[in-house]
Image 1 (cartoon, rainbow, N blue to C red):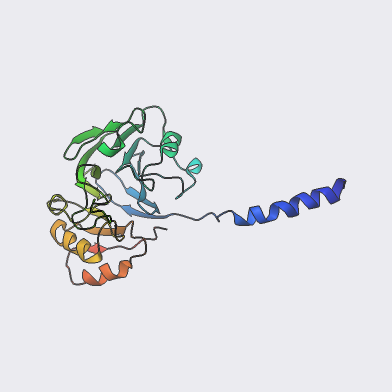
Image 2: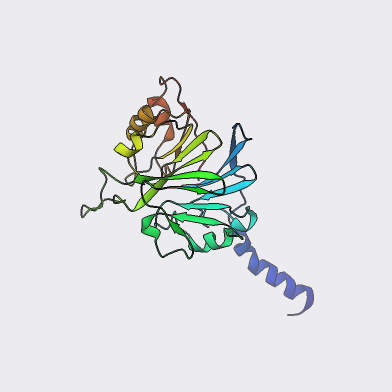
Length: 247
């Protein structure tokens, strides 16, 4: 087989492979005003977010299965909540690095990301002009069959990042712990809601009534219906529940 016939044969053989590639998808964004300019939140997928403010880029739990990171901006700050594969992807962390990128990880990620700074629960750091607080993230109720919590206390972090006067709480994989419910002055909260690993909608509603964020995003919600949370908080003044697509 030669010439055009050979070319046609190659193209036909490759067609099934091309068809199997996932289609490109646009990522949803919200804009939150601050006194120092807009904070743009990009909802990448699952537990993965990108936050941009003042020309700086913060990636939270970037993993390759959620986006094509070759097309996304490099990071000034990378935050990793814990070691599970849907939150820590060392190849993507390296791809997003540039000169001066600061990578902050939880205790459970220690030694897994070269050059990363480990933040333990309760620590506070100033990075790239942002204040970052590490908040405990762990299970109280949900455990594996042998009794070990899906997320043991002390291993993982949630993070509170301050953009000008706007405090954003990304809770990581956790339940409605006492430390979570003690958060105050939170403008935007991302609370996880996938079972059995994190919270039920009722747990999220309970936490929200204590934290009282102005905007509450259920995220990392897997197969859990976020509209259940919307209904639970429907009469709660001052808390706007925003549901965004997190594939």
